Image 1 (tube, one colour):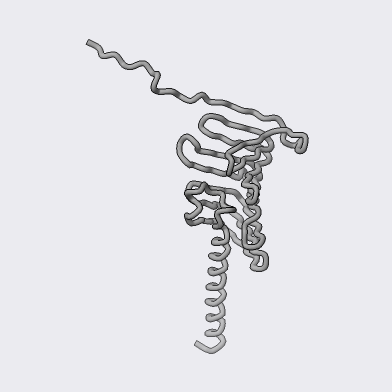
Image 2 (cartoon, rainbow, N blue to C red):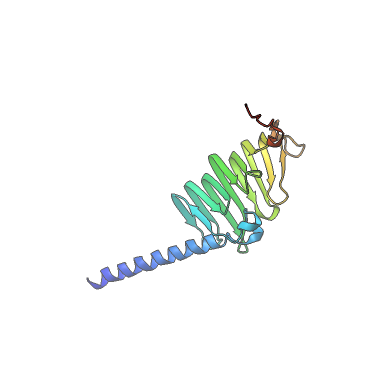
Length: 193
């Protein structure tokens, strides 16, 4: 092995290690509980990111993920075709997810499971809001909401949908309410002689 080959090999290994360390650093910046999408029991769990492509800006800390993007932490999962994470002062400020559709799933337990989808999602960390636009759907076991714009407050567990004077693009809201099944009032089986 000559000197130039060894130098190129060393530079390649150093670049690879540096890239891996930067990716790890970028992902750990997603962990502060004040900016987490996860419920309180999940903020200590690892964040897993999978994508076909990643670009990380070392100056700003912003990152772009493309191609079958999947971000999960505990019982929270975000999926989409493209995800942009914007940071400021080492904290996540905003996450933009685009997809056909983009999806948000939160499975706290069977009674509070949330499935949401839309063409575009924007998570505003300081407001704890997930804003879903274009063919937005939000489903829980007892109801389904459909509109062109749905805002879900992940902290207070409130939903705002539809047309508002400040945002006329919200469109009409379709809501389907599903009564809870009460199995305790079912007639008891009688014993046949």
